[in-house]
Length: 498
Image (cartoon, rainbow, N blue to C red; front, side):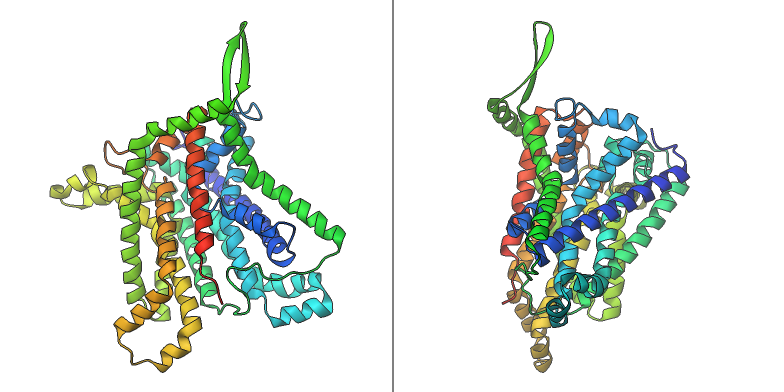
């Protein structure tokens, strides 16, 4: 058990893993973004689609994919239990899985900054002084806020989620608090330190997002386009293409190979010896077992719809109430701290609210309804949905702001109608993203679900502790396909500048 781990060790591991994940994911994202947006390597559009397909794939599914590849029947005979026995190997596994999971988000954060940093001055420097000078002297200095946002997002993913650290028995602050809440062995110091780190990280992340979204975007670059085409010599262009595609193959292709490989393996005894065989029939049989989780899918669907609907209502209220810059800054700060709050602390807060702070006559809300998980999911879903709607709102004001100022006497309902008409696809996209996040999240509500309610995420998390078997690999493939299709559908219908 990890509840009795010293506060110094837990804090040191949290900072070590968070810093490593932040640096690794941000560096990978920067190079991939430059390669696809600036240098236009071979297959740039395919590369963007490949890395983006992991945007909405849940963390526990990606952990399943890597465990399937290095488990007892995977590419290498190294299970997560073996990795957990070697402390530094367990830490390395946690860093790698978290970095790969954060990479798609970091990529789009850096890409958005790269597109906004590109202006006519950069084009002139490219022609007169070359790409490397422009990159060092113009692009990278302008990218600092976006690189910081990418780093903070990756760091926050370690701070608020304990799924991977629990599987590899790595006692970070989040993991330590999770076990304290789970087994009722609460200690105030780890909880206070975890709150303090989440507030620092959330405040910094919110400030970065708020300031970046307030900047005017470059109207010369389409949101849906790839942008520049900086020419390199044939040698450097081919070398960069090979390097980036090698990185993408490791981070994005290997997990799929791991899952498909694990689905088809079967172990049997022949003449007293263990023999492994792989077949397509075994893969189909593994996919057929997905129907065993029908009840879990039903609970996940119901919970996700209610949580996303509530988040959408709250987003509308916040957009209407926070009209000036100062109140909006406060809203961003609060939402940033919500997003980075460790899942176990969310469980503790919601549990205290429903079971101790509310009247006893309302105790049925905790045991007989989904109110607890729905409220807990707001910490993850609401900040992301509101941030996306805010970005869409800023794009709308940038395009029609002058016209709106000239027509300042228009009724409020007409302004709202114009805004909704412009962003109708944006609302659909934001709702779908919120639904996918709700469907895939686990840490925020794991300990506050009512009796008899088991979601797909909870079931998968339980099964992962016993290793990745064929049935779990088949379920992970279905969930990964759902997440990939959701991500690519979002990319397909994202509004483009004309």
